[in-house]
Length: 287
Image (tube, rainbow, N blue to C red):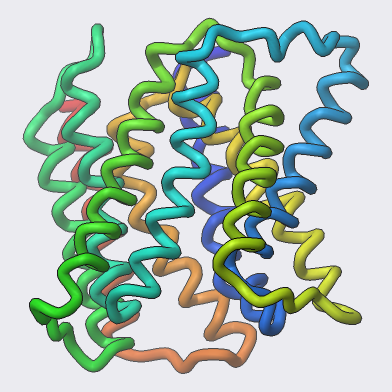
């Protein structure tokens, strides 16, 4: 598989993650850890079925403990700290800090063998971050960081670091088949179910909400993690990091199209900054 093909496959994860907000809004009052358990169980189950259908035996899951620590720690760790941040701090501020992970991916990629970080990559990532600031700040009516929410800010920061390290470190596990991600998803589902039993009320999906749960499990919480694994292991990590800032903008555009949000100048400005950042990171870095 060529580097360009792997990068394009990785980009499909970003497109799928853009549908998270719209699909999640259709799941009703299902609490976050229960929703995570259900969707990761579906995503892991689908991945396991595809693995077996391809004739790959269960022996593929016999991996050294560092592989499992990396995979489960990344998937479950990100969601655990993200949900903790949303409980301990206002969503806008927590979301902004958590969304430092694309910039961190770009910066951390410099430590990988054979990768060279150029100024254009950093500038592009910063433009993407600026677009996210404009978008989230407009939604929240501005940011109001306060000392009382420091635990939530720290959780959001850990969340960003966990996902960035998981993504970049995937290159270190390049020989591990992507099929193993199914095991990571199933383990994440089990841990999320435990957190649900400990911390949340049991509010299960009803009626059409199950369709949204299944859609989440197959797409943004299923296929996306497999394609992201391919992109991180064989694609252009720096470009994927910059492109990741498109997810919140695309998510908002989908909400606008579905009638859940209204178009605004801040959305247009965020689009311009993020698209401009991607152009800078792509064209100028090559030059």
